[in-house]
Amino acid sequence: MTDTKFQDYISPENWKTLNALDGEKPDRMPFTDELAGETLETRFGRAVWTLKLVDAPTLCLYEGELPARTHRYKARAVLDDVTLVEFQRADRAEQAVTLVVDAGRSIATAVVSTCRGDTRHVSEEVLQGVLPGGDPADRHEATTELVGHRALYTSGTSVYEHVYLNSSNYTWHCVTGPEKGQAATEFCQAFKIRDRVYLFTWIERVVPCDGVVVLDWVNLRLNGRIFGWDTAAEEYNMIRVGAGVLPLNVTSYEQAFRRGVE
Image (cartoon, rainbow, N blue to C red; front, top):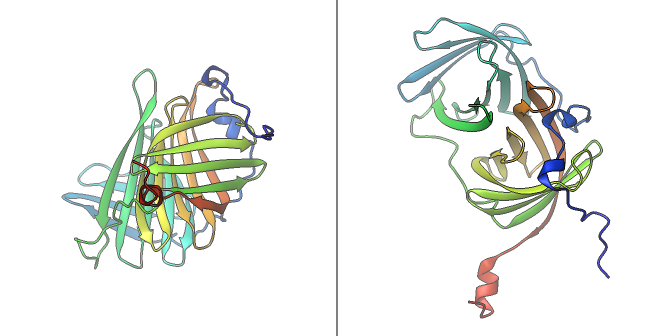
């Protein structure tokens, strides 16, 4: 007999809104001030971003010839030579930026997330850039290495299941926690940072939000943020998240085809 304890389904009209996650105590890495006082110049093709990290919470962003804007940021050293910098724009509350600063390779990848229109559903723009001294041809390449993998992510009282279906879709399922019973298949992207370490993004269809995280399957941890519009509180919110990783299994279609399935 099948155990259905963790298999209840919650229909989308009964889903929790974004701020339901704010009360969780995620298993995230501590924030760092190691970049405080640094200036990061990143070239995204012809566009140039200069970030002056004045102190631990404050950065000034210069975008080309535009006037500098001051924002409040958080940073985490997700690897010894890779730092995750996140901020919601002070001048555009509907936009958030996540920057992966890869000092080891002198490159950076930025994900710009924007809530659009009346629905406030999120769109993403991924920018590949180079730091001073870096190779303009180097980048965090898009990857399909997660395809076929299934894993559990544990954070506070929450447990989520991920199944990576193909290069652009994955399924998530909340096994337990505030979103228990919620599940969906979403658009996603994955970029390889190091061997078994990935920048992973997704855009949700029901709740107007997106997620940008670093999946570290070497140290078995996830760190990043979820950003979007809370439809109940009617406010933008950036929620920092973190989790431990438990890989479950890998599904290979090639194995099935070799057995004669067509």
